[in-house]
Amino acid sequence: MTRDERENWIANIKNTATFISSEIGEEIIVSTLYKYGARSVKQIASSDFSDVFNELYAIEADLRSG
Image (cartoon, rainbow, N blue to C red; front, side, top):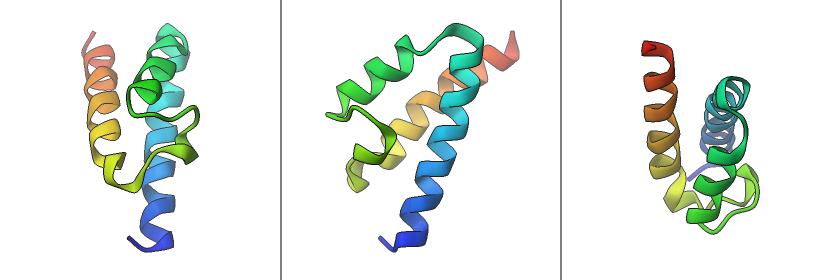
């Protein structure tokens, strides 16, 4: 994974996390990161980026659908 790809994953996860946090708080973000052994988005293993993003994106989609 290139540095640019890593930064894109981080940006996408942060954007999704920001939306979720603004709607329902940070607890779900913290628990999702913890599930993958990370305390911050930058600590997520490269191999887990897609799983973390997919999990958070599903939550965001549910929140947006109302």
